[in-house]
Image (cartoon, rainbow, N blue to C red; front, side, top):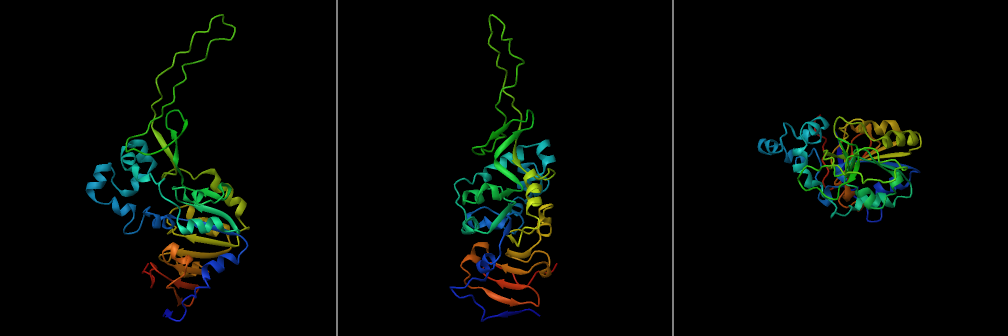
Length: 300
């Protein structure tokens, strides 16, 4: 039977989480939507998350979806992109600032890499070096044309289907030896559907993902998994690939307690001031429960 140590509140000058992170030579952080909820971006799978908000029959019908996960299905997007684009203004998050946890990660001198599932770009906005940030599920501010392949920037989502505005090639220009060079006629714009450079379900992860894993394997002293349920493959395999000490920072336990060396159950930002935390004696890894944390563990 797990028991709560009511005398184990962290003192203002002692933070077991930040001390643990600082005590290791190289840290890889695996991030999910839970690190951005405090700035107003919903997660995916919680009771107040994105999929829950889309689950009503009327909402699904308005977007032409049969299931909330169809929103990020590549096959569905190819069949009909209007539902995704109708919802897409929710991706306009440029007015939001990074969370305290984003800023904390950017300040770590021992940060080896950030592997993020998020497409909000807040890791970079917080100041983490681009060379250390792997956007495993792509980015939302650029797109590729499904017709001509041209890349474009997306300044904002309007709710309408975005289309390529490049001009199709009208053919080879006249020879330089021509005495008179008639102007090349300008054709109509391409008009192909732009697909945001997001890793939709059914698409492979960016090449940077596998390349970074190859570089970081065996060089990682501590793997920090923060704000994710590790439900999506192949991202869920990263902790075992990298090796090192495994630390979980999440509202609830992911997998089994025995999968982790240390566990911090709380709202992600709360771990930085470490107020109101209790240590749990569960006969396994060190477990701390703070604001927003769920304990006892839910039945599997």
